[in-house]
Amino acid sequence: MKYEAMVVGVSAGGVEALNLLLPCLPAKLPIPVMVVLHIGRFSIEALISQLNKKSPVEIKEADSGEKILPGHVYFAPPNYHLLVECNKTFSLTVGELVKFSRPSIDILFESAADFYREKLIGIVLTGANSDGAQGMKTINKNGGYTIAQEPKTAVNGEMPGAAIALSTMNRIVPLQEIALFFSSLDKFVLTGNKS
Amino acid sequence: MESQAKSRDYIEMELLLEAIYQMYGYDFRQYRKAHLKRRIEHRMALSGLESISTMIHKVLYDESFFKTLLFDFSINVTEMFRDPEFYKYVRESIIPRLKTYPFIKVWHAGCSTGEEVYSMAILFKEEGLLSRTQFYATDFNNNVIAKAAEGVFNMEKLRDYANNYKDSGGKESFSEYFSTGYDVAMIEKSLKENIVFADHNLVTDGVFGEMHLVVCRNVLIYFNRKLQNKVFKLFHDSLVPGGFLCLGSKESIVSIENDKLFTDMDIRLKVYKKAIL
Image 1 (tube, one colour):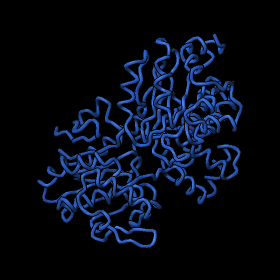
Image 2: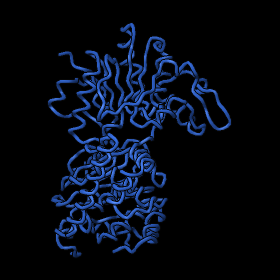
Image 3: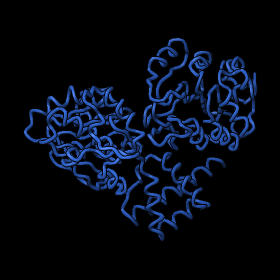
Image 4: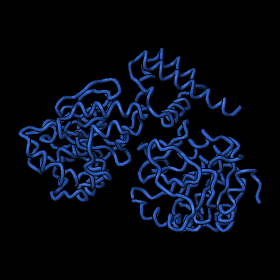
């Protein structure tokens, strides 16, 4: 398989974006998807159960030490940083805020890039800060595949804009096209070719 | 070839942790690695070191560098009445049971800069238990213990803490627990009197005897399963029968072996009770 995991970072305007994207995922998803949504310390239980009802894959909060499995979408728990361990499990930390955020997109993306190397897909969506830009740069440096939401089509263009300014994305596209990408993700991860 | 390059990092890191253990006795060998790796790389960049291997040499020959790294490894982000719901539960469900004891011992393991143990002291004071309670607050990091013992907090944070306090069911005027200066707030002396701050390492040190309540929140998330199990046993041995163990919101006692050591009090808030065997 060309790609073995996907990470998604999203902030202001993110709930709507995730409600559009996650239901598009194919039922037989051969990779895990990990999501950081900036939500501070507020519970995401309601959001997750709502997303689960309309998505064909299992969506859950990541637990400390949990094995990372294909066919699952894992959310960083509120107020914890989420990291990928070298034995393909999750770690959680309560370290300092990074770019005013915990969970931080950069921390997830950098640790995932460290483990999955060139087999990682990184996506930065709408948001009103610059978290994720550094992480996308690391994914690019390691040879992974990167997509930023086209800033002018985002509720908040600042976050994808920061990523685009810091390193070269493979694709810069509106949300609707990212939804198409999600729906054919099972095929894309095999070859890296758009169907 | 990529996977080989990746494993080199981890070999180097294991050697670094082994060197630290043999030289200084601090044992991080059973910590989960991703967080440590991040901290090590951060320190490498700040110190202009080109590899973890060069850091091993520096750690062995430069004790002050080791101390810097040790500080990097410890997480000291905390707040008063963190997770207000948990404190509400302590007030409503644990304290009534503790009231049945003539004398109460509480251990905050991994107390960091003291915010949570002072929160507990405030709660115990309001419930009329403070005068017959002995708190032990421990951490492996001497710097944070010294800071915790001072009981001085940033004024700016006090407002957030006051909100947490209110959300936890606090009814008094929170600011009266502090004497305030220009930009700092010092915790009232009476709240410090029953707290002993001490150096204790959960990985390498032993039992604290006859505790009625052990609070250890967001410490075990950094340990691998094997080390977690060892620490659960340590907590079990430190508690009186029926004593309480409180963990962080993303920590749980999972293995079957440990299930016998503790029973669930509140699964969501991660409150456990030592099983009476």
